[in-house]
Amino acid sequence: MSAIFDFCHWLNGTDISTAIRESTLAFPLIEGTHLLAIGVSAGTIAFTDLRLMGVVMKKDPASKVLKALLPFAIGGFIVVLITGLLLFLAEAQKSYGNLWFRFKLCFLVAAGLNALVFHAGIYRRMNKWDSDDMPPGKARMAGALSLFLWAMVIWLGRQFAYSS
Image 1 (cartoon, rainbow, N blue to C red):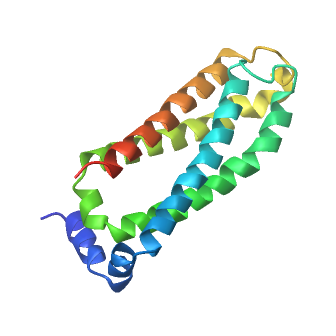
Image 2 (image 1 turned 30 degrees about the horizontal axis):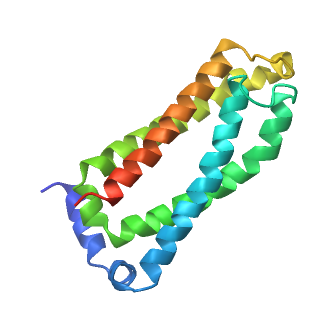
C-alpha cells in the first residue's frame, strides 16, 4: 500500500470526515456551495479568457476587464478550494481510487500553471497591447488554453461525481 492511500484511508476514518459524509445537511450544503462558487469563478474566468482571445469586450481595455473580473474569479476560486478540500475530506478514500478525480487534479494543476505563465509573461507587457481589439498571439493562446483546461476540470469533476 502506498503512503498516499494510507493517508487517505486514515483521513476517511477521522471524525470530521465521517461527520460530513454522514450528515444529512453538511455534505449537500458544502457540495452546493462548491457548485455555485464554480459558477462564479469559472464564469468570470471565461469572460476574462474570451477578452484575452479578442472575442468579447473588444472596446474595453484588457486591464479594465481583468481588474473588474479577477476579484470575483479569485474569490470564487478560494471558496471552490475550501469546499473542494472539505468534499475530499469527506470522501478521501473514494477520491483517491477514482481515475476521474486524478485527471481532474492534473488539469487543475495545468490550469494553475497556465495562469502563472500568463501572469509572469505576457500580462507584464499588457500596457503595450491593452487597448488592441485583437491581443497578441500569446495572450490569445493563454486564454484559449485556460478555457479548455477549466472546461476539462469541470467536466472531469462531474464525471467523478457521477461515477462509483
